[in-house]
Image (tube, rainbow, N blue to C red; front, side, top):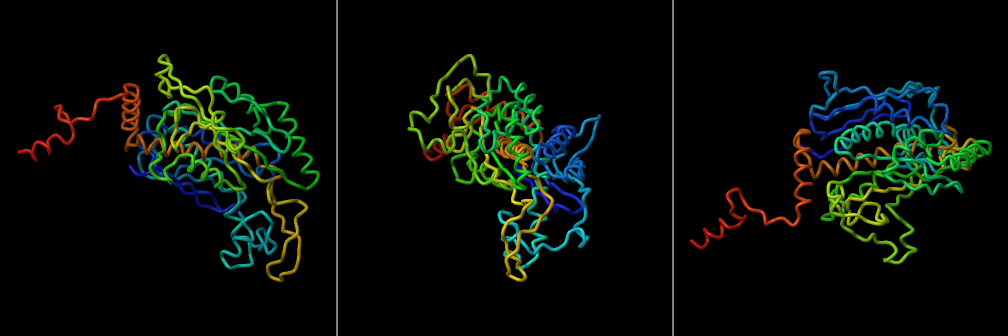
Length: 414
């Protein structure tokens, strides 16, 4: 099988968004309701604009899956998913006019210079966060794979401005945390902090301003050894950082303790290692830590602890009151153009982040345990976990008892 990967296509006001996923093994059961549920969550959250009242995102599969016995499953070929845009007006110049006054903070100006044009329309249509619906669909599909191996991704809003929760995230209380997150209009599992976040968003709207904030994702149930230290581009922490920074408006990523590691000594940062023989059936194989400052990743590889990733989203760059800008045609000072937008998209961004993180974990999982079918993936995973529990292993030998290299050595002697 090839490496698990995906690409997206489509513009904000074009006919549809397309997600093309390659490398998914055959036989994986697809939970369509779950994928559509994640798309619905991405459209929610206090602070969203009017666009979300127009769209009702749902996936249509165009290839790579088959329904048999009432179950939708992958067949090993590339999977194409389509999400239609009801607000489809890109080819109507009256409804999507040229944009000559770039918005500071958006891709408008940089894209206009890149493609040597004074019309920012084509850039903003593709750079729009509308594209994240396609990435959410890819991540939700990857989570169908992770769940087959008892791995779960949980994303939420940590906070914004001075409203930041210190709620502890623990797998044992995950169901309760999910319920609290779902009860919050801003996807924060802390009722009091949620109220303060909403107040900040409401004030930003009054001020014709915008706000960003912190989103956080935890992935539970990962076995040790995903990712690699052999090459820099195989390090899972680097790949997770790239996936999160690839989300529109994200400007920083932290793993585990993150930047706070700079303000502590090594003895207060590194997670001590212990062994509990009664827990060898767990993903960590019995190796436990009293802390998880590393965020489940050491040397670019999972260490059996939960993965913890935090992302910083800047405020949306489309302000109702605009900002000082320049008309690219006349070069004269103007206020930036206005495109219908959100006051705060942090709750939606936390859903996107939850799913793109899951996709990278699934990619690393299949790199280690991949096969053309789910039967092969399952067998490889179980074999690895069994051998890891039996460490130390005897040196590898061929069937029949000969160690690798013995035959050539005996031939040389002869």
